[in-house]
Amino acid sequence: MKMVGRAPGRNFAGCGNRRRPGHEDGAIAIMFAGTLLIIVAFCGLALDLSRVHNRKIEMQTVADAAALAAAYELDGTPAGVQRAEQKASARLGASTYALKYRYGKERMTWSDSAIEFATSPDGPWVAYGTAAGKASPNGFLYVRVSTGGLDPAYSQVDMLFMPVISRDLANVDAEAQAVAGRSSIAVTPLGICAMRPEARRNRNGELEEYGFRRGVSYDLMQLNPEATSAGQTFLIHPLAAPGSSGTSASDFNTVAPFVCTGTMGMARVMGGTVHISSPFPLGSLYQQLNSRFESYTAPCNPDTAPPDRNLKEYKISDGSVPWMSKLPAGQAASLSLADGKRWTVAGPDPSPSGTTADQYGPLWSYARAVKFADPAPSGGYTAYDVSDWKNLYTPGQPSATSYPAATPYAATSGTNFKAPARKGVSGRRVLNVALLSCPVSGNRATVVGIGRFFMTMLADDKRLPAEFAGLAEEQSLRAQVKLYQ
Image 1 (tube, rainbow, N blue to C red):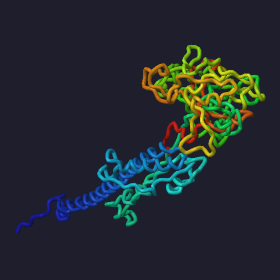
Image 2: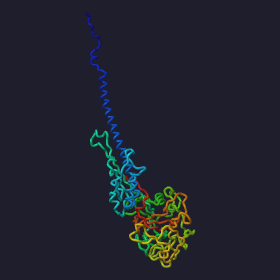
Image 3: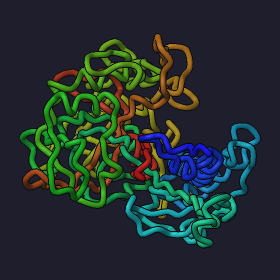
Image 4: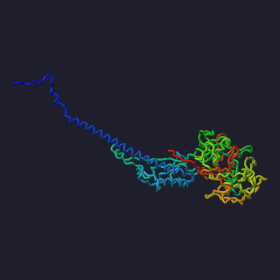
């Protein structure tokens, strides 16, 4: 019998150890399953995080919009706080364009717990109920809105996949908050001295405020309660807030835009010393003041500095004060040096002997004289009638003829009115001017009040005639609001 032998060099042992193809397929399947699990986990994590991110954006939008709406109403009074709360609430309850969440599908209900107020953007914060009933001389000018004060469900996002990692991650709070408030004030960077120390003084039944009488015109460049030789004026640096350690630039390029708009880049001018230099450079800035008459010189423009709605100049040179029976001797009340002050014949009490009717200047072009009252009436002071001129302005006793029912400026047609070519803004000719405590030493001064002065005519490089129209409440002079955080 013939034996078949093993062929030289051939090994059959390897055939028995070779793996079957099915075994490798199983390993790949296990690896794929593990990888797929990781991919699904990351996708779930991304989905959860994207939902949190979206809810956070929604809540931040709610907080920002409500805070800005509320801040615009704040004027430092309890009534302003109440209006602020109403505006914030209205942003959620509006029938149109209401703020919503969950991809804009669901509405929210307002809660007063979501809003707080402060006198500084850094707090301390006061709840709405307390702020609305608190009469503070400084006033609340800043608001904080937190969605955490609303229904907690609005900010809560229920996680789908995160609980697999930890039960503590079953839901995430996407609460947001915003702080908004005043960033600028409608006060022109011009300061003059208060002519008397009393904020309100009874002048024979008439209200006198820091030595100024409503309805009387003054050349603001010529006043000085400390000396008779020259007027004293000040440039207030428009970017250095009261009490700040630094100083802002006072060059033309920095100051001119603020003169155009009649604003300063600070929330307040009272409550600390402001940075000043003297004198106010009228020769460089009078053209910017005249933007109110639709006379534009760079950097003024009608977009940021619109004209007044009535451009009529009440000038004596062209007879534009027809309501006065005798033409005034000057565009402002005549200069008086009585009592060692540089003021007008309307200042001393009584007016200097020998004062004549024409020396009181144009009277009541914008504002009437009012009767003294203390405290100030909630509905405003009572105005005098023109028939009282004979008692108010003595000696001299000017008289009025054809005086309008309101004031000449209030006219909408006729000889006392001139319309701008563009849309005008009522009261733009009123300069809110800081009244300083004098004498002033160095480059700091204290603002004791803010006087409202109506430009009766265009200013020039030496004169700024303006009629006193009373004091302004600082808190009411908001110019702009912004988000602080």
